[in-house]
Length: 535
Image (cartoon, rainbow, N blue to C red):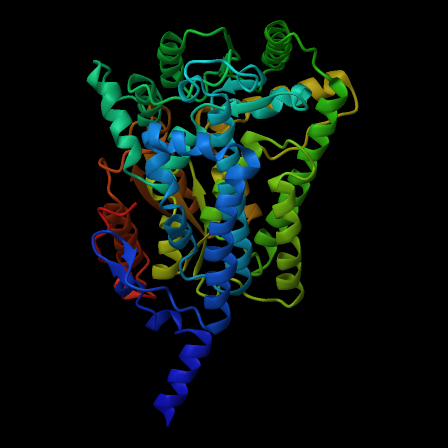
């Protein structure tokens, strides 16, 4: 009788974490599922219809909403990164949302949905304007699209957003592909080295160069905007990109000592020069009123982000998993907002009631939590969902990520001077910039944020080919010991999964938890499995 009662309980609610044995679902070494994860009746059916079904339908609808089906098919056939990334999107959902239930499953999934919708909008924008898909012809879309580096804040162009679309160059061919399909960018890294470039610089820059070497970049804009974020390697990739593309180029540099007021004045001047360049090459003057309108819309997103952070810091009811929180925030803050009804505002409207209900009912959204973790420095792009694994295996709940905190500010709109100053500051706080190569003061902001979010453990990313962060490795070790902070290191090579595999990352974390922390895993099946061929 007890066995039948337990069977019925497990069917209705799902098995408890210590009995889940999630790795038994995997077909090794692909990481694909033998069957769907059973999360209990309510959450399993929600996942089937409101995540899998809903997103499949909207992935098709967004193709028509943001562009042309014919151009989509041409792009799918023409570009390697497109063909190898669109198919496994829902597997990307599975990995990031694994083990989640209730409000955490729902709110996290809406963040994933926003990123997918934004991705489709971006590649459809490129395909509509791409001369390579239109017989070499430059159409009207081509002349109304502005190409810029992925680390160049799209908000610089808010003043033209009623007539032009600012589309980051590498965000889809490089950044998104790393997360969805970890194998795609390896081809581009190898291509960069095949023309004689050394293999020791940042593999991010190598991949951004490789897409040009293999002619795997849409030609969708008459101009190109670049910056030097976050290091000299980025400058090197820009030189090659400029050589391959041969377009009018504006470089908006980021200064190293950006806390200096004179430096801020220089960056403010550079932004005004960028605007003048844009007006010259488009023939359209910038609208200050439109700029202010968009900045206020962006500030609205930031204020809700602060509300979310406050819930994350002070309650156990924060309903967004670490990977969804980090990637959504990078997307939203770097790409920018282009209307009060765009996908970011729509998502926040859906997430707010989920979060408020969880807080009101005091729901523990991550009940397996043993440690509240802050992740610092730059993450392994090929394994952003390691934190989902760490939560299910060891109860490590990643509350906040460093890249999420880069743009911890709103932009004043009360005067020309204040707006320009804050825009310069925002530009200088780009991903990987402020706390990675922005000076020791900013790198060590870790201690304040660790206290602010009530974290008791640090996941310290160790980007092996980043000369900047390698230089402060020992300083962090000294600080961890002096402050008696539990911290484990996650070595990686940004997009290159061949340097440090996912399995190696998991083993290092597991060894730390068992030997240093003396803890037992929640789900022992997750400690040793082969996912070497997984997307």
